[in-house]
Amino acid sequence: MRIKVYDTPQRAAHALAAYLSRAIARTPDLVLGLPTGRTPIPLYRELAALGKRRDIDFSRVTTFNLDEFRGKGDGDQGSYRAFMQEHLFRHVNLMPRNVHFLNGRAEDIRAECERYERAIVRAGGIDLQILGLGANGHIGFNEPGRRLIARTHCTRLTAPTRAANAAFFDGDVRKVPRQALSMGMVTILHARRIVMLATGSGKARCVARMVNGPLTTEVPASFLQVHRQLDVLLDRAAAKYLR
Image 1 (tube, rainbow, N blue to C red):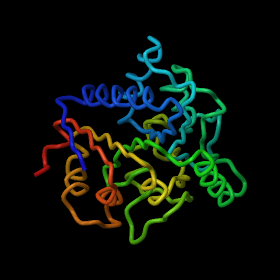
Image 2: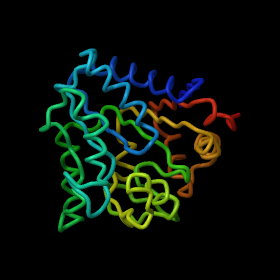
Image 3: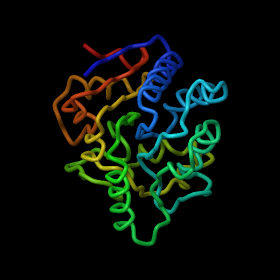
């Protein structure tokens, strides 16, 4: 685990955007795993600026997003697909055929999760997975609990996770779906490289448990300790409890 600490969230996002730009320049057909939420918004802003200047070329990149709310799909307000369209996809030259998303409106959710796993395999696996960190230690929508699901699955969201996503639903937690589809922990850990971006004092205690604590299903992010190529990018606020 390689940890880098930056003065501000903006500097951490800038550094990660530069890292991605170099990775895509080296491997133009990179298979990239992407997160949603508030933390990566500055990153996507940086990538959008690079795309506007044509300093980054997404034309051969393939993307897989981590998760989607159950009941939400392409074009739905509050969907993560709409989030990605707003913050990144419409700003860069990513080919629509290379964008992969879970369909939260699928009638057969189990079949949809299996389809997504097969799509990742057909793409050759994920080369670089970008992750955020939930304040309760979740990554994707792999929530703390007595057990973790290995592969892409449907999960029930905890109250803190729903509250954290209320901003995408007019601030009304009652509008936040109670379930979501998510890559599983094994799916995430099979990525060849992983970069975690965590910022803000609200993530500090969880960052410390992820880095210094034991492997536990109560902190799903702790399992990243076993990955052989992991970078953790933090701002000073998120790093304040690290030894």
